[in-house]
Length: 127
Image (cartoon, helix red, strand yellow):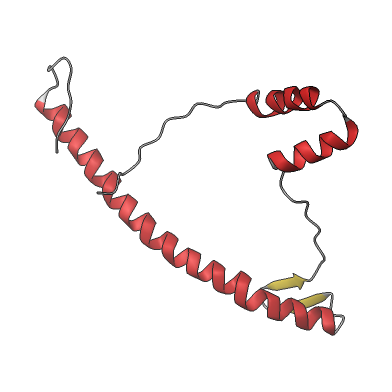
C-alpha cells in the first residue's frame, strides 16, 4: 500500500489502524459488489420476466387485487412522463417563443444554473 504523506509525522499505530480500515473497506466493497450482482439479477427476473406475465393475466382477467400469504398484490395503471432533455425543452420553448436568441438565452439559464451539490466519496479504480 502506497501513501502520500506531506508532513511525514504519522504514528505507526495510526498507520496500522488506517491500513486496517482500508482493508475492511475493500473487503466490504467486494461483498457489496457480489450482493449487488445477485440483487440486479433478481430484480431483472422480477420486473422483466415475471411482472409482465402477472400484470397481463390480471388485466386480461380484470383482477385488481390478489390476496397472498405474503400480503395483497394490487395491479394498477401507472402513467409516467418522459424525462426533460435539452431537445425537448428547446422544441417546446420554440412553440412559445419566436426569437432564437431568447430561446438560446433561456436554454443557457436552464442548463447552466442548476444547483450543484458537493460531496466526497472513495472510489476503487479498476486496473
